[in-house]
Length: 125
Image (cartoon, rainbow, N blue to C red; front, side, top):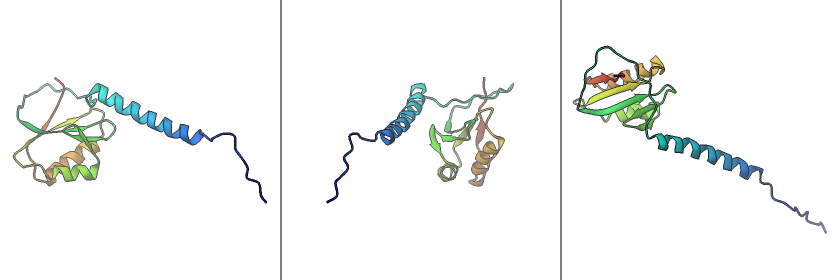
């Protein structure tokens, strides 16, 4: 008869790995919730105009993240969401000054493909 080996302990290394990943996720999310906003460094401009009836705000971060009304979207989801906009709605693009020009062109191109012409750019006052 074979004897069964008995272990005196439990391997906790995988458990610790999972806990560290969960801790990292909680710290990232809590930082975003605590700030309550998406960090954008706007470029400045000498000409400014206040617009009151903006329907959609599109944010482009320096990390190539896209937000519509503070909800994050991937590039393919972004195009699908833009397709639901009405042509009469005013859309503001808020782009970080360190955001890639390619991302800005992607957003403008996505809006123009759907025939959306009422596009504004936000700048620092």
